[in-house]
Length: 262
Image (cartoon, rainbow, N blue to C red):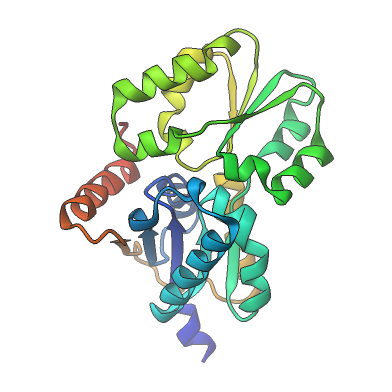
């Protein structure tokens, strides 16, 4: 039985293709695992949904991934993690659930006394989970910035709109901050553009690498690491009802997975 579970997939899901930034880090550490990535385009963005709607949708995706023979599931969306992770763990104690969170503790550990902005969605910043994290590690030099609509623009892929958005919303912090916490998994896809606006000397923090290390540790503890010696497979699934959107998302997903930019 254990050997059969060990052969299972690792499910990764996000409200769109932003979670590819998390999957990339996981693959670096666990290249021989098989992955199923679920992009929930049909219900994107999560930011305009109620907590109950987000929790219900995460429950549906989790059940779908369990049916797809996933031995562990990664919530690669900060908003979904903040709202639904604990509820899902309570309801599904027999499945390993790993959840991304903003890397604000890393600022505390490595760059505590520097001016900092946390870029995240409204849902993440207003969540109880983030506020507990924020107040626990507050350096009293931090601005929590609700980047409403930025993830949607990244999902859309319009470079000009993204650059205009960044200039309008974070341009005033140029030369005034040294730390930037990327509190949404979409944001690393425009890290270069954020750096151009804020100044290329800023230090970026995101939680993907630590999540990947934690996932490996948890799989190891549960004796669920794959014994596969070959490079694992990746399956991409998008929930949109429109074939054109699904094809576009899949194309961009694999583009980002290869390390290409917008």
